[in-house]
Length: 291
Image 1 (cartoon, helix red, strand yellow):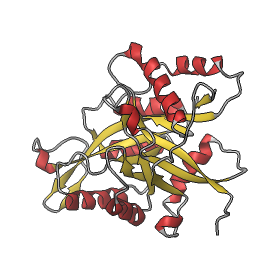
Image 2 (cartoon, one colour; image 1 turned 90 degrees about the vertical axis):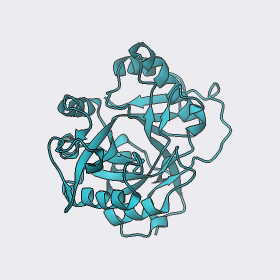
Image 3 (cartoon, helix red, strand yellow; image 1 turned 180 degrees about the horizontal axis):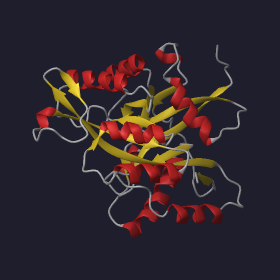
């Protein structure tokens, strides 16, 4: 039985910069971090498409510049979003290292978010995988996530909508059976692209023992991008007096899906961030970047 003194900690594990000019990354990340904290988020992950976060060291310098002020903390995790694929066959699914057919009808694609507690882990995953042609083999992706002690999340599982949902559901169950090392620990049941949490995806999260993830999928600079922040996030219950570390956040995502409790009782869930009146100018905060 959980204590009533628990509180909700909000984490957005699915965010993007504009991803187009290296000189603009730093400005994008600052805008993103400030807006996320202003909306009530306490942690985010930067998961650009097939791109490791540039200028991480310069971001740390920015952090150090405001470190001496009173602050509210926001954790900033390094990450990636990777397109992965495997093959659909007449007998089910297969896992080739390279495409065996040029027809998209024979290919199942998902986008995997990858999050780690250290920038070097994401950098190594990038080095291991990104020399491959796109999309990247699911087999190689799962291996790199596990080897580098990171967490994989299936982002917006309905996208791309190249196959009907029944086929994609079967594909997700195939991934679960294949992923014996449990590199994947969550699935996005609520995205900034959707109006509400999707019950059929939540059901899959229970079947596969994956944590239920909410993520904004915000792209800085895209029209209306700020409205998506806080629309979908991952809520984690922590004790009121608990001192939270980055590992605590990732641990809850890693372990929550294994619980035998009912859907509504799990510690990790996908929700909107409650509206709150904040003024970022009056609220100096210190982002914590993970080395």
